Amino acid sequence: MLAVGLPVAAFAIGAGAERSRACRAAVLALAVLAAASGVAVAVAPGRAGARPRGPRRAPCPIRRLIVLIPARDEAVVIGAILGDLAAQEPLDAIDVEIVVIDDRSTDGTGDVASAAIAASGLDARARVVRRASGGDGKGAALASVPVPGTADTALVVLDADARVEPWFLARCAAAMDGGADVVTARRRMLRPAAGASLARLLAEAQDHEQLADERVQRARRAAGGASELRGDGMVVRAALVARLGGWAAGALCEDLDLSTRAYLLADASVDRLAGLDVWEQPVLALPALVRQRIRWAEGLVRRDLSVVLPAQLDAAIPARRRLDALAYAAHALVPWLAAGLVTRAVRPGAYRTPGLAAELAGGYAVAGLAVALATTRDLALDDDEPRPTRRTAARRIVGTLALQSLWLVALPVGWLRTARRPADPRFVRTSHAPSAAFERSVSQRPRAS
Image 1: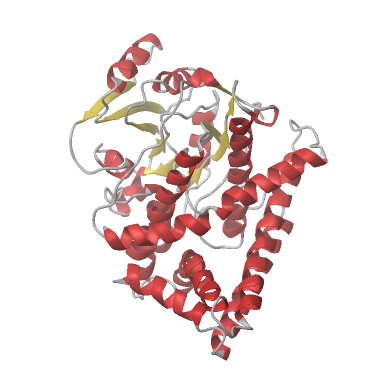
Image 2: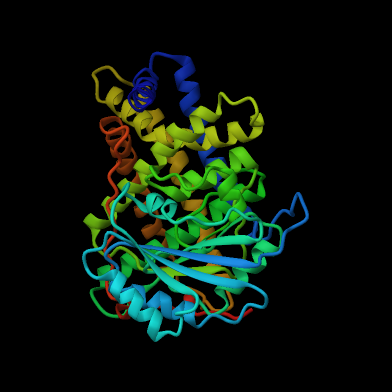
């Protein structure tokens, strides 16, 4: 009912804004708040939230890392990430276990992974778990592998197309030893080694978009609010996962679900540390890119309905945390509000609503532009990034804004899908090309510091 009622209510506010002073005030306030938030994120230091706020308890040293790699039909990429893990720097007094979850693959992913494990010399610490049945999605795959819920164990979750540097696991362990309970790597997009210019532009736009999202999440963390995981490169203390009841097998976006529950129930906001990066393949076809965003939007909606809204009734959770999560979740209804404004605007006699629609769009445009500009500045200040030309900077900013605009379509579709199938989400994986088809750009060259 909420999947229907909340969008209807947001649409009604927009459609009634011309008649109601309260509705007009709400729309104007939202536009101003969006613009102010974007500017605040843009002026925040580039490394805001880069280090943990400090443990609330004495940190428990990590003695074991369990690397989980869910993989369905990933035969073309699984060998590369296993090769990266085989090249990791030695970890003193830390046991590393690698588990490839062959999730009902039909392309021989499990066999390819087993061969890569043998070829890389990982036989003593890596294994393949074959999953033949059960729920759909990455959350269900992760939940299918029992792990010890001990404080000295950390779980590292990598996508099958991920690429990491030799010091990646050492930095994961160091982050946990520093007192963090949950950490996420910064996501970077690889570039096509060859191909059409459109593919390279899409890859660059997605890379810049992920960096812009990273800046937003760091700002949320630095302000004392929630910061969210982003699927690839998750590092979580096993004791926290156990405390939260494990991975949500029915979640469409297990990263959003776990990070929100961690913040609300355990006051564990995601730490984002400098130098912890993971690279992955971008989506190079527009239809696939839209499908990916729709899946993310549906996962976000389902997270809000199943975690954020019920938490508002839990008096045991501090009001500050509940309101922080609720305020962020409310943005998922903005496209419905905008649709109501536009619907009212095209009716005869409308004279206020067009202005309100423009003001709302302007507020979010200012926010998006401010963050995109700041992200370009971040790259320009990086020692490994040459100062971009105006054309390059403009291309990055336009690409980021274009990708962000997809949420105007993806979110309404996500709400509709949730309303249509409230208890049966459909997970649609993103296909990957062979690892050799991608390379890192100049700004993605690794630094050992």
